[in-house]
Length: 357
Image (cartoon, rainbow, N blue to C red):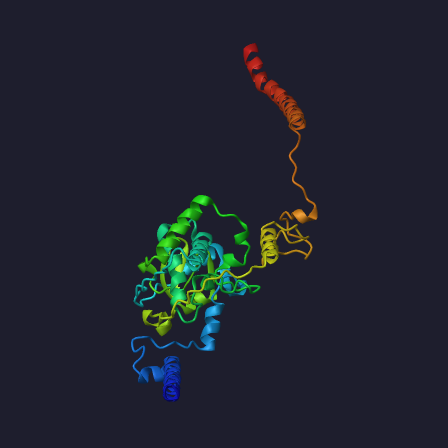
């Protein structure tokens, strides 16, 4: 019995040593897979694209491409429409984006991604044509895959929402989320979102990462390649390699989260925007803009009506106007009759003389 125990001890020791060495080797292999240089040496991930490092300057430029920051807007309204139409469509090829499929439709990540995508389609393009709604969804997915943007659907949609201004999708910080969506339009937007997350590709906008409404003209519109106009939205891609399909290789994170929003701040901003639509009270001397042809004192408007000087146009009372009119007619008739009677007598005198002969 003593010999058996003496023989078993070295065996257990050797097994423990082998197990320890095996653990060290396994840990070494795991470490190698995390170092790009060693991965290539061991032939691991040979087909995986190398991660793209976006320069800080490029990231700042991308972040500034928003219409939420009013300092970026050159003109608005009809003038913006005309100037936008004058920007030529780029001659660069429109490369169709790769299909994006989000699996696990019963999971929490999918449900959250679907909500964010539906919000983007609804609040950005609810009344746009179907192609325009699909194009907005495509822009979201293009950004998910671009290294200059977050790598999740909600991350893209809510980028910048926690800043005072500068939201990439303005509805996330202008108070639009406080308005309850219309059920029918929301259902249509959700269907577009569901199709996009199931792999549908809107090829008309290619690798577009930006768009804006045609009634605003942002500065950055001149720095991008114009692809197409669909409905009231104009779509753009980045210039050079940054807009080529080969660069859209970022891996989807699989983590979807809607950030906490400052709803009080959203209400304040929505209220401020509504107050701007109210016509301000007139200030003295401002209702008649000055003209270079004016020849008058600074406090005179040269015969043009300035309502701030308490001048009022009035319509006379109909009864009073009628009586004055009748009096004027009667006076005019009397004056005419008095002027005509002597003339008639003068004209008839020769006739009487002729008859007397």
